Length: 364
Image 1 (cartoon, rainbow, N blue to C red):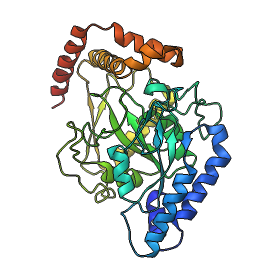
Image 2: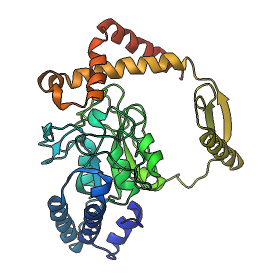
Image 3: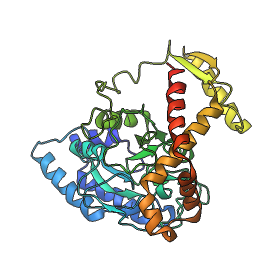
Image 4: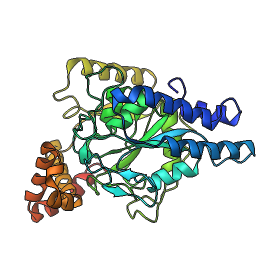
């Protein structure tokens, strides 16, 4: 399905030009052909995907449509619970959890008609930016073997970039959607905190995590976000604000848009070629009518320190049982990161929470 977008495929299924079964079979054939090299999947589910595809095809034939994603094959980072499939969180213990229910984001996509191809590879416990995983294979960049896919949503980036799935869900705490999206040449969106429910998703850092779409186009990302966003009674941090139609204004242009460029952080340590590319993009936006404003990020070093303290403490708490009972199953580099969290005093964690609130107010 390399040549299709989600929007195009959903429209073609509605028009009877392609069936949900044909779409699923095409994706599964591509997984079978390419994933031995890419290592994007931990748990492919061809039987389940074809079973659901046949149900969706029968419904379409009868004129019944579940929603805007009817028959569209998606896949999910293996920290999203999917009913009946194991959630490994990238660990050696493939059945770290076996979910009885879908996570809220997956549930909403399924209710909109999506079918599940399986669970995607990731950096173990979502702790790392490169996409390496000693248990399930290092995820390869779909454009160049031997190069990193980015992490921790590595399988999501590679699967979408290689056309194994039309779209995927990833999670982002410190770049884990955005990094693989950039490395794999796709679109990745880290939504505003609370915009998408995290209920049923294994956390890295419960007060810092975000769930978001990874797709081949901006329009597809807007479509998936519209489906998964919104208040969820199972996640107290989810926002009660109404969900807008993200597609409605997507072609409206950027004239009058204010874009802030943080000069004291954004370009530090950046490769000159990348810096040049970013500057060129800013010039294009400015030429289209956007207002580019250079700003200074307030106390970026403190922000970085605060984020590290909070994330390390919370991830250590989440995986404390695994660390106590089966530490030998955790990759040494990941185990070392967990150990850092256990060593941080409680008063440092509480102080970091207070500092984060203060720094957040500085942006308001």
